[in-house]
Image (spheres, rainbow, N blue to C red):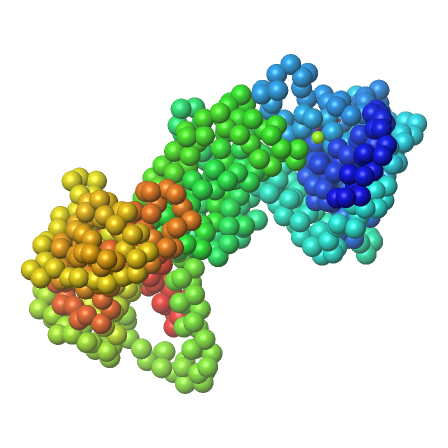
Length: 611
Ligand code: ADP
Ligand code: MG
């Protein structure tokens, strides 16, 4: 610092105009940060050129070679040189910077790459027989030459950053640069399902190794999107996602999102696009978190691919050189659209729970099969009887923990019960799982998780009416807390009162609990208060009051739920199943775990080798 100051003091500064080459190198630092960002710019150019196939190859993590080939409209010979000069673009005329419907518009990518690497563009347009080729190296443009080519453009970028060794040092290992490339290409491919993509690593020469390949999808937009997402996010995602289609004041939201029971421990699988452009927008990601806050605990993230579309004037894409951030003119509308669009779709899906769980269950059964003597297994199998006809005695081997009153149930009642979505309760096993029979399978319900969701939904309903009804404790409970904790609670005492929890300060750092939510019945108020405090600390990151209160309500619900270990009568179990059927979101507990698993008869038959 000292040194710099001295240097400035000692010499009178002279202002110089930077050369075009130097200006381009500086711009390159912003636009082309690493090989993957060069690939992003090149692929976006191909999409803008109306390509239907884009082939990308690279060597050494993109450091020595990047080639992007497309079948778009190409660049005319007399335009080639212009394409390489700074701020030259065919996409806007500069008069309206808000009405931008292409990926590119800054006219900076190609000149930037030409300034920091060896760039060759070969292109041919329609109605001419020969293509042409231009090369630029470290900012110096060579003469245009004719070159045989198919219609479209091939851009080849060799030795990225050889002209700026300082930047070269910042590149990561080939493996990590390759990872970034594949991530960028997949993101772009998600947004353009009708375009075919191939990504090849050609480091070891020849045709190279295919890293990713997606053929053009067909059908309507949702079919295409679903097909492409299956290709990129996998079959598990496609089985456990639901479709989103919502609109608010001219802004639309489409895409697919995962059921809460299919979540990840990181947000990297959340893909958001604005007008087709992959973005990382904090506002949108926070809206996403809010939408799922009822279903997922902190630290779990849904997998989503969301596409927001609006008039180009309503979003400014020119706030970031690599265009990764956007600014909406009406952020409130967009947030509301995402929160309500997802919540609405989640409500409709509330009964589904992740199929991967049933699959995993089946998988673990299969292990059992392989660990047994095959012959013996087969023999037992051939002797086994039909499992399709309800017969109480056949479940007699299960550990029945209760007075199994299904035997009281007449045939008629049973037939009626079995026709319900969640079927007829047949047994409670291990004091926590309800085993129920449906018309085409069996269902295992986690009674605690299921009941917790029911209580939570009931609490929310009461809240939306006049607040949760409370019961006055005969003997109020005094709870000693730290000063900090007591202050934290008293800050939200008015809200807690609406939740049916009446607390007051009781001198010093103690509080006194006078009322508890009636729905909880007899409850340990101290544990309840301590849990609420935990929740308050866990959600301290959020300033969104609603998010905080919902989390507290969910904690309260936990206290009113049937514990595992509680023995249930058949009527109670059936009542629980019936309530689950009519309660939104009852397929997942408040923490995003499934409340039940369904095994279809066909799956069970597979287990026994019957199909
Ligand atoms: P921008 O995309 O912001 O316009 P670029 O430097 O990326 O700036 O490209 C400059 C111009 O070169 C584009 O406006 C476009 O006309 C042309 N161009 C670049 N790549 C292609 C391509 N693959 N196919 C057709 N034209 C292209
Ligand atoms: Mg561009």
